[in-house]
Length: 94
Image (cartoon, rainbow, N blue to C red; front, side, top):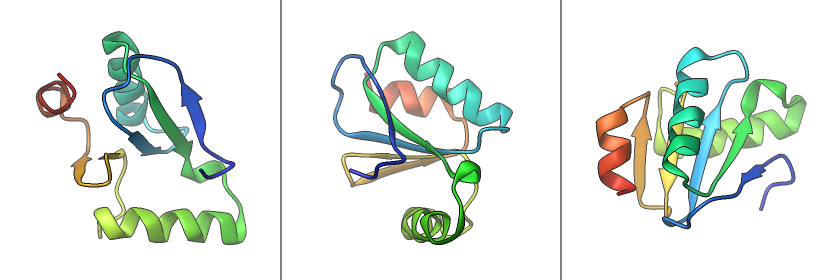
């Protein structure tokens, strides 16, 4: 687990990782939705990283989302949701 990941307690709905920006309104909405749903997840605010750490995380995001837009959520290393899509997030994490 990346040392820059933050853990949020909640119900385990699989391994949920949210790549976000600290200044992004859609990223904040996604975090709030996950919190409201009571889902356990990990997140990393990519813009707060420096140098090689940031490059490493961006490479990881590009594997799932070549445009490297935010938020990017990866669930169980097999599902990716790009952007704030409340209905899709609720469906996948029901």
